[in-house]
Length: 358
Image (cartoon, rainbow, N blue to C red; front, side, top):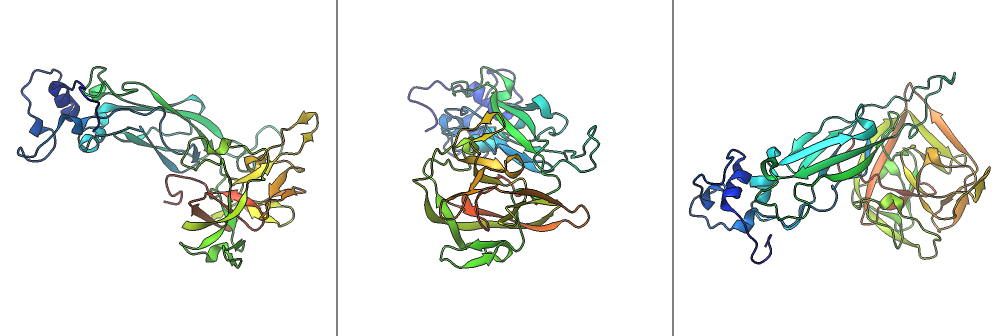
């Protein structure tokens, strides 16, 4: 049931919600006209109702340049006809993007209560500093805010005006990631991956359904949660080795990658890894806790976590470029845990809603 007991629902407002063509509540209207099936089909008023629009837009927090992501109004307790008869109608929804990314973020493709946003390419050219080398991946990220709202025919007094956050702008702050022509969150071909049974396979030889070594991290949010990247861990005493199943594998190329500690990990700059900063750098003192960070933002002297849960100091970070042929790379996605080990260190899935290679 999408409505509470004794909820007032207007048949006149329902006609506007399902047709978007009546500006009044007095035209003759029948319930059977609303469900898209025969007049003899039993239909209830609550079948077109919702209880809430949620508190924030759903969707992934990161959008890679030159890819597309989907975002949605997180409606609650939708009746059986709401999606088809109301939720799929663009006339009832307002979508927009704003702040710093107007030149990078496209106008949305509308799908009723959901919308897709695409990012154009982000330039990595250096200007003004005399350097011919481009900025590495992750250097020129953009921040944008997406808004979406639901109101029947854009009217404040609609059929579902009882719903929480009806006719209210809902927000989603996203980061548009500068990937510098590379694939998001990828390991180089040839990277050995430890399987759950202790054997190894090169990342390009993995199969969907394979179980690989992972880490159970109490307190780590699922990647579907909005703020999973902000999880912090003062220590790793509760971490335990676990396993995760490979759910998706994609192959592509990248023009650059990062060589960590002279070959302990070869990974693209868009891949978040579990990282702990050094205690200090220059005049700055860092809080000693683990968190997720992109490789270009790491510091020599910080630490990464190995397969036994040990902190391994970062002694070198080298960005390798090849703008002519690039490098073969592989992206995998694992579940139910969203983390796994590369050659040496703990890394995270990209967590995208859409396949970045489509």
